[in-house]
Image (tube, rainbow, N blue to C red; front, side):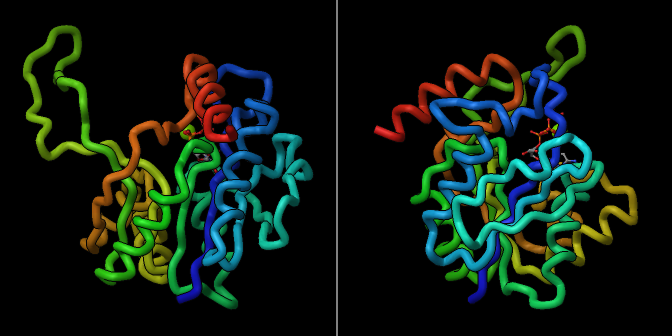
Length: 225
Ligand code: CTP
Ligand code: MG
């Protein structure tokens, strides 16, 4: 099975409120993007690593060529557009499966990725890493109106692993129909295709706001030792 990785890295990082897009912030000696790409480059089963980069944030040439399988492609307005651009750039010689992983999740552990891929290939179904919700969840605007049962609630993580053609079809149809797409799984669900939930480590955080930086730096340092 030919497997290609796609790394959306074309966001502006508005919630991080940093001068550069967050994927270019340096933590524990390397940029966040470099940490993420180094993790993926350790996986021998990945054929190509397509990184979606913004054309106009000034960093298009700043992609670390740490592995010969890394290729760049222009990103789009929303994350889903960046992923679709990367998918369409593979159309001439498509992979069987794609593994989509946020640039902003450098903490993912390799054994979780391998388990996701193995479980999905064994079941012949797409799937995502996810972690069971731990907090008590409230619904409301200014006051809590309800405590939401959490026994079947998951936090979606990445990587997300789907058959190439199923993901191209689901994402393009969902975008054409104006469906809100925040991850690959939301497009696949909309297309009524299966999304397997594979339990992954909850410290695979998406670095989003300034308070995530110290925690991520600590964990990255720890992983490197
Ligand atoms: N991403 C992308 N193209 C976009 C928007 C986001 O490739 N048009 C990428 C980001 O670079 C990130 C991942 O998708 O690696 C997850 O998105 P998010 O955490 O929301 O990053 P940003 O959109 O950059 O941050 P924010 O929403 O705070 O602006
Ligand atoms: Mg965003």
